[in-house]
Length: 330
Length: 94
Image 1 (tube, helix red, strand yellow):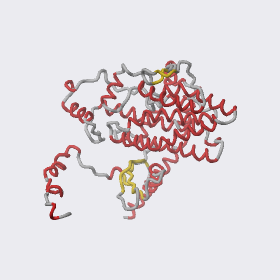
Image 2: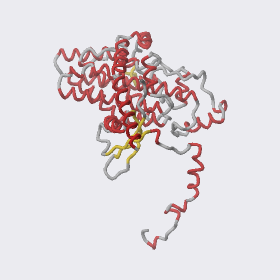
Image 3: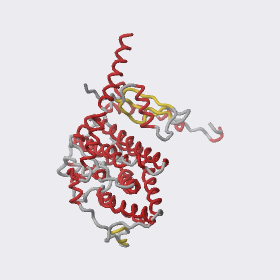
Image 4: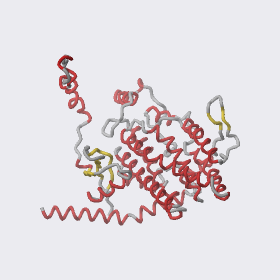
């Protein structure tokens, strides 16, 4: 999931009878499956939670360009390079759709970016892991984008109109990302012994961080329950993780690669795989900023923002000057 | 100096013969850059043949609270729809 552990400010989910008349009318609209639009009345908690969630999602798309961008100049063929460029450009586009959706809630994009740079907003834990070999680019597309799709497909039905519309656009484009990743994995897995080893190594390193993307179990979380009542979260973290494992294991088998989990076993009764939980202490360390690449990612983001400031200011000054010249001429 | 680029609403004509449709918004310093950015952000996969951009601040929207006053009156004018009228089969297609 690109947004992890989003807080709602709720201490409990209130029933319809405990709500004010306005809140009840709002909840009933959501229950009927109506979309909430930016100018409609909404509870403050709904607005704030969405800003946090969509903002975190947008930041993830933007920071997510860094691990893959690392390989654009090193892609093994011109075709792979063109594909990777297109994919990374898509991620920038996805970030922009999402920032715009967040902005309809009364926050500006610059404010969100400044909150990220000040460490007051987060992005997905997954982008704090390094991409050490070309096979990692395959694993990222296959597993990371695969996990993102798991989460984003149901979010197309989310209650907030602009978020839902952004998700629909994103989902249309995301399938290419996963397939190009799997295509890289197929090439490597059917290649030389050295390529096979690289593919297996990439799977080994990205498996558990991909499972962490869905966040820890939230079956007892009041935030999760509130978000689900508001339909800004559609499935529990455990449901999505299970679906992801069930979908991915056969894909790994097709590649002839081994999922790095001794406990992985088909469970006939539940109709899904049993699997090991990732190391959640590692996850919390990464969230705190102590993952392998947290500092590098934030430094790259802040540098890009600061180095680009003169361009942004220059273009704005030029536009203002032209407006002033036109007004003077009239 | 620090000033955020203004917001623009983007409208795309998907195919020849269709209306421009609102697809989203973006930030740009001026109209020319807004068109260039819209091309990159909203038409990476042949989504359109024409782009309009309008400063978001220039959009006037109807008041969501006035929804009933604006749209309710058309609900009881069912005679505006062709299905309101029963035309005998003998008359033929109309």
